[in-house]
Structure formats: structure tokens, C-alpha cells
Amino acid sequence: MARSKIRVGVVGYGFSARNFHIPFIKAVPDLEVTAVFQRAEAPADRTAASGSPHCVIDLPHAKHFQQADDFFADPDIDFVVVATHTDTHAFFAEKSLLAGKHGKSQLRYAGDGDYQTLKKLKSLNAFGKIMEAELHYDFESPSWLKSMTSTEYTPGDGHAFGLGTHSLDQALQLFGRPKSVTAFFRCQRGVSSDVEDSFTIILQYEGDQTELIVTVKTSVTTPMEKQLKYMVRGSEGSYMKASRHYVPIFIRNVLT
Image (tube, rainbow, N blue to C red):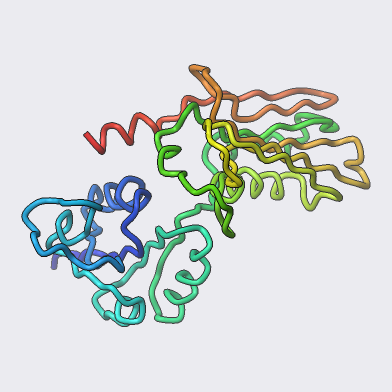
């Protein structure tokens, strides 16, 4: 008997859903996009895109829901992917669980191989007493900056929530709860806005880690072939990892 596919419902049809989620869902033979929750009405002319992208044009075989309750009540959805604005992730993730669906939120909480290596080295005490650590999530002029047009801040906006979620989570796992947090938010994309695209967050500790300073950074002005990802300095050893981020290249390939 052929194995049935996992039927995926996607919450949201913005830039992230179209570029970071749906292409990968479609690439997996065991998954299929069954439904999309997009509040915008379907265009009258469905033969070609006009104006903003719409799921009924790009995914004609998927169901289109404009109401959240109808979407989560659909028995044909097995797995929900939440790809909406940051401040709605918890709300839709909870609705998914209450509806008995499996699912994931857009912001991930699993570490990659580089992070696992760093975590392993720390567990082996390879650094001795750690004095300083830097965790970076840098991108040189990423293409999504053009969509950051808001000048007034609303909860969840900015890269501190969007990208800092990943690096701050790793800092907490590695070093625990800090005694103090100092943050500097900046806008490097050439506009005057309360919504930051770059930040530096300094974490200081107490007890056995009194001398430790952890810096968590994201910058969008960083013309380097390989971006610094991790830097750890300790009494017995140091660790530096650079990474060539693939995301901007991937976006161009998807959109062209």
C-alpha cells in the first residue's frame, strides 16, 4: 500500500512563506501543500498574477481560507506551518495545537552543525575558563531589507526578534541566564526608522562566569566573503567559525 502524504497547511502567504517554506515543502515527496490561510480575497482573474502574490494563482490545487477558525477546523490538514508576522507566531501555534494538528513555527530552535560543534567543545571543557564569546547572525545587504518599510515600531518588528531569536537562544543554552543585558539597536539600511535591522546585545554574568562577556550581533553592513559566526576565547583554547550564508543567493534563484 502506498504511503499517504502528510497534508500541510500554511498560515500566511508573505515573503517567508513563499520563499523559505513552501519551496521546501514541495521538494519533499512525502509532503503536499493542502491549504493556505491568506486573508486577502482571491483575484477575479486567476490566470495571471496581478498586484500582490496570491495562493490561488501560485497553488491552484490548495484550498484557500480567509478565516483562521475555518482553516484550523479543516480535517484534511495534518501539519501546520506558521509563517506569519513575528507577533502572531505564539497565537497561531497555540491554535494549531488546540486543533489537534502537528506543526512548526517559522522561527526555529534547533542548532546546526556549527553550533553543535561549539556546544560539544564547551561540554569537553576544551576552552578552559571562557572569558569572551561572540555569536553572529550577519548578512550583507540581504534582499528582504527592501520590505522593511515601516518607520514606527510594533511588537515583534526588527531583527532583534527576527534573527536574534536564534543567536540569543544559543547564548542562553551555552551560558545560562545572564545577570545583565545591554542592547544597542541600529538602522543601517539608509532610512530613518524605529525598526532596527542591526543590533549588538551584551550579556554579563555572575558567579563562576563573572569575567565572561557574551556579545550577540547582527549586522546588515558586512562586505565579507565569509561572515563571522562564532568566536570563543578561553584560558585553554579558542574557537572561530566563519560561514558563507546562502540565503540571498537562494532567494534570487527562487524569484527568477
